Length: 280
Length: 185
Image (tube, rainbow over all chains, first blue to last red; front, side, top):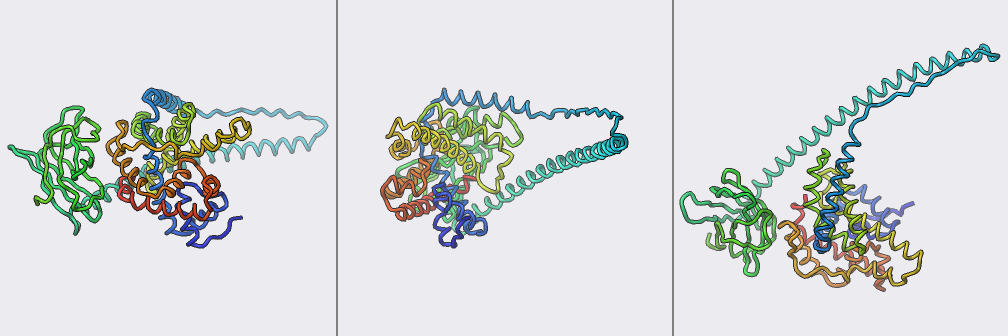
């Protein structure tokens, strides 16, 4: 039986729970409290997100490319085989033959036989109904899943639009224009919400990229060029969003460079467009 | 991937392999175990993709929880075997001391995407800002799979001290990495 925990006790143990470092009894007690406490549930979700980031501190180069490719091959082969196995198979029905033998049991055997036949008939109806209900339930489940996916997509789209609007209209948003020289030159507006640490760049007239190339946005400080993500314009236009906390006085410039697909840790090319902080 | 698309599995694997392999290799030492656990992690993600609900958490948290749990299961099984055989008295301690496997100082790693490399840089900076004893408690819990009681035994510190260190470390980590939370989704 788990010990009942106060909110404060459970709250203090959430960090350890997030990295699964509680002993079994304490874990059960904290989880029992969390199941009834919205504050603790939200806190635990955030702590688990933070804890999952610890994985990034491990060196990614520990496992070689050969191993990576070997596992990939096996995994995809298993998935292909799994897909074939899980294809719907035709149900089969076993026929049970019952032979009644008249003998000394007389009427009892006859009555039992009749009961058996009636039971089998009823069972047959029940099984058929059950199969019909199960098929209907499966169809409903699939439809519900599709509708849920559609709803989720719409919700994500609305949230994304809301977030974009907030990122360019907030009270603490600074606006910078990235430009270059030339006719029909690319240009962009950068909206930096210094309170929410969000960066929203809306770019126009971006030249079409060759295959295997991408644009990369950089936040330039005195000591580093920080990647704020890669992007591929569509018809010359692009919206780029990033979240990065940077003290207002540390930003020296913004720049966009053209780089190999996937981006690079440090810029390799000359800026396609740029702006110096403080020039606006 | 939820629709059972094998190509999606390939893309998912390519995106997450560097991080999954990193955490699994950090927890385990045996190459064979590492390879097995990485494969089983992605296999479990593939088979259970339909159970993942976006509103309840991020893909990152979901996948890395699978990876860490599988690796720790393997680590604990190996530990039990060693304890039963009693062949290697020192092996238990070395297996549960992840802090000697300190991450390289550089944040850049060519196998990571730009976004992942940036995330790694921020996480390493956040860890570097923690007092050593708090970082140790956190790493023994996360990479070593030790409970607070086991950490107290291993470090010789009172359990209450370990609990305080763990709590403060997680609070600071969450604050420092708050900027990543939106991106995790």
